[in-house]
Image (tube, rainbow, N blue to C red; front, side):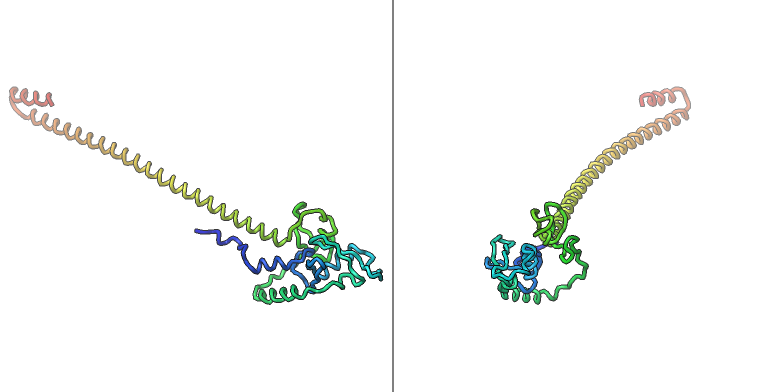
Length: 250
C-alpha cells in the first residue's frame, strides 16, 4: 500500500503563482491598490503607507517636495517620495488584474469561516507570520518595527504547510516501520510454529514407539501366561516338564 499519496503536492502551478502575489510586509496576498516602487517591487498601498508613516512620523505636516524616504523591504533600495508620499507611487494594474483572475479561478473553493487572531501589540494587524528565532507567531508590523525586527521569520501558512508535510511524512515513516515489524513478527511466528510442530511430531512418534513396544511386550507376556496355563492342564510329570522347559526358554 502506498501512503505517499497523502503528502501535499509541491508542484501545483496555482500555489506557485500565489507565492508570487504575496506582499513582503503583511505576507498575505496583495490588497488593492498595489503600488510599484522604482526598484520594481510591489507592495499593498496600506502596508507601504503604514511603513512610511512609521518611519516618517512627521510626514503629514510636511509641505516640501521631498515628502520623505522609503526603504524597500525586499531589496532595501531607498526611495525618495514626493509630497504625496506613498499615494504618489504608481499602481501596478497588471498585478491587480492577475489577482482578480486568480481569485475568480478559486471562487469554487469553500471558504472557512474562522476568527483570525490579532496581534496584541498592533490591534489592527493579523497574526500572519511565525518568528523562527523566538518560536512564536506574530504580525508583520512586529517584524518591521517591533520586538522581532532582527529575527528570522516565515509566513505562518508556510510554517503550517511545512509542519503538516512533516507530520504526514512521519506518519508514513511510522506506518512503514510497523509494516516491517509486522512482517518480522509474522516470519518469526511462522518459524516458531514450524519448530513447535516438528518437536510435537518427534515427541508423538517417540510416544507411539513406546506404546508399540509396550503392546508387543504385553502380547508376549499374555501368550506366555496362556502357555503356562495350558502346561498346567497336562497330566503327567513328563508332559509338564517338557512344556515348562519351553516356558523357561521363553
